[in-house]
Amino acid sequence: MTSRLSKAQKRRIIELLSGLYPGASTDLRFGSTFQLLVAVMLSAQCTDRQVNKVTEKLFQIYSSPEDFAGLKEEELAREIKGVGLYRNKSKNIVKASRLLVENHHSEVPKTRDELESLPGVGRKTANVVLNVAFSAPVMPVDTHVFRVSHRLGLSAGKTPEAVEKDLTALISADLMGVMHHCLIFHGRRVCRARSPLCGECSLAELCPSKGLY
Image (cartoon, rainbow, N blue to C red; front, side, top):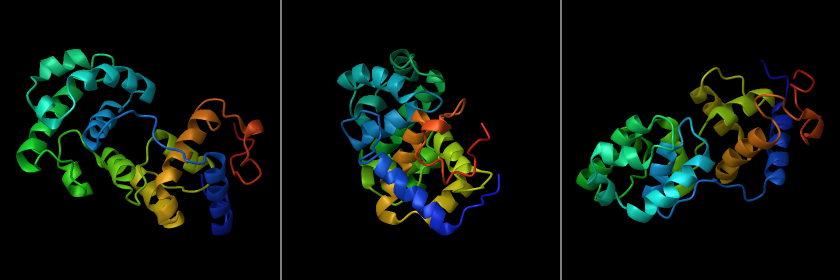
């Protein structure tokens, strides 16, 4: 849909969102930047809650890039069967771990290009790691962020990258980290994919999608 909001109205929505979910952060549980990377890779097409169930046991056994690099793909696959696409994720995590050990001194790189050079790491995964681990002013766009941004009139972009571009132009660098999570929280709790709770939404008066669902 085409946004009917002014820039001032969009910024007011951002302001209200930040007040609704103060201190919003990822629900994924991890003990290191590397573990965050693994958790985010596991989270594709899977809930954070399910990922946490798997990693709670997984990270007690394997915690470092060296640990994962030493695994065979089928060994890791058995450990992560609780998440979707586990065979492909196992292959990518093992290969990415070996590259971290061989090329990055077992450290997770701090640039998007280097992160995206790792198997199984796309733009969204790279942005989540940059946002959460390194407080970089980037905007990861998942299905919640994409949907909520469209419904609230913050972006009319047809691709995740287009929505990302619109949001980064709209949101100040100091709010970028928390706003990613605010949009996710709002998408999960209020602006749900099916049957959004428009009657309970604090943003309803500004929302161009009010009454359409």
